[in-house]
Amino acid sequence: MNVAFSHSVSPSALNGQGRVKELIDVIPPEELAKALKLLLAAQKNG
Image (cartoon, rainbow, N blue to C red; front, side, top):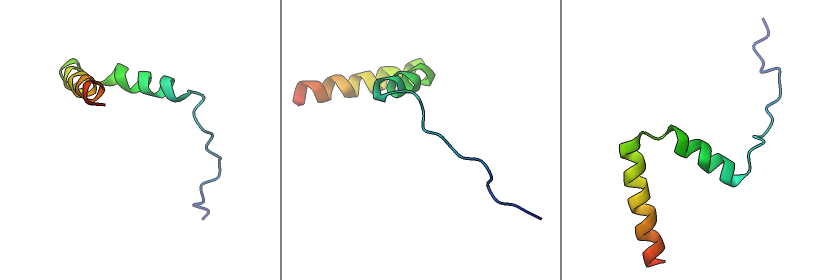
């Protein structure tokens, strides 16, 4: 019995911003609001 992984995995065609957008699109609205608050605080402090 052959149980080897027999196909290759290619990297995503998305660039960095595309990956971020893809993640943002699946975050529930309440979690997105928390993330935005954290990002705005980091921007203000940085």
